[in-house]
Image 1: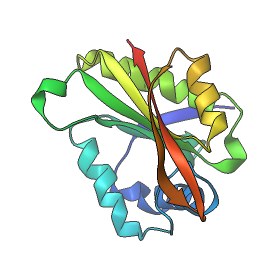
Image 2: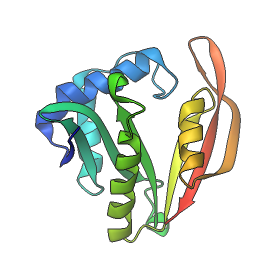
Image 3: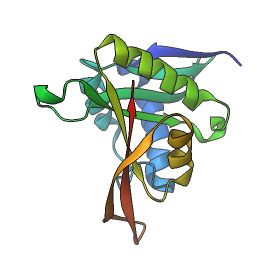
Length: 162
């Protein structure tokens, strides 16, 4: 398989939102409780003005997206970024997340970012394990701060030094 990473732009709106909305409606990986309108994509593009954001393609099909975003908007936190990736459900487990992590880490280093953070639902065991297997360590747990699908969940913060 030949996966390509391309800078995210307005032409990717429909496909990116379709992938994101799948995770909203079917998992704890994305926090909103109900599907978001395609117009929400503008928020992703806004982050992409300063931080790298990519769509992931298999030939010409968008199969995921990934991005860095500010951990906190104040300049004192400019060496720390939060990492995000969502891979189409039919493409998980194929090493694409690892490729996305590598590209984002490389982009982060070029920006002078020294630490990346991941904010993960306690109900997303697969993501927690992925991050642990790739050098992230748990640095904080906010217990029972969310409720989705009538189930309370905690937020696990993980960090990795670059």
